[in-house]
Length: 399
Image: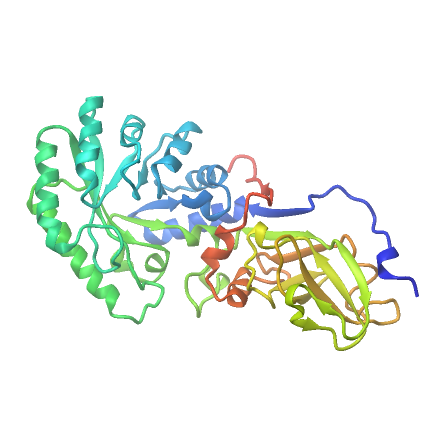
């Protein structure tokens, strides 16, 4: 029998590796979620390069589908949106003393404010002679940024004083939920009550609020009482479920990212062959190994041994340790043509190898990689590195 390494695949010029981003799926997800929360406004969260999907294409698609606002963590991200000609409402909420508040104000970007930023924002507004638009953030229980309730009265009073001086406008109050992805937990009720109290204090002090917002994706889906004036949806617009017990399909969402590459090598090996660093996997019979040219430099978690890879209609687990640039799958005991009987027709060299996608063909989902890595679907898609080119399925003309 000839070695499987000698089999030559047909040459094609498809990308060696790619993250295929289905913009029609994002359009569908925004439309679906937007209709669910109306009349509340809808913010599409496109921070972290749109969770790895590409900030600008996703932002344009979300706006086309009816999103009212765009959300970023950093001002630098919001400035990229402005630089691309997207001039609709944008909020940025995570700052440091190095944040360019002046550029944000000049570009009409709304700013989250937890307390310490207030004087920095005011100084930039005074220099520009242009009032800033701010959303005051209250920490209702998550314990990250946001003013504590003990400091809230003071923050509101200072902000209203600056508003009276014409240096800013307090247009919003917001917060973030800690356990909305676990709908049975009582902390969400406690956070919502704290939020209502904070809103009442701001309004009593003279804030004419346009937007009260606290709902993330899980709260958008499970807590209508959290929608207030606007919801902030990140994970959901990418078609992923925030719940352990509900799939994307059950929520009416379509996963937007497919991560795939090409089988780079097929190799017959004898029983006893070890695989990858540490030799933690050893073939117990003669078999055929397939080399998959994606690794942790591409964002695939190093610890995700057992993650699924689909080749020619069959899904195989990764065996051995995932390396920087590559991983290995075991096609199984050799059949008559050197591959597992009836599982891999012909040579798999050059065949598409899908790590995760939308699951329409029974293929693997990103949640299976998250489980293999002991993490969440958010992290898996967000960490896919820029070494993996993004390929976009465009919206139909006129959408």
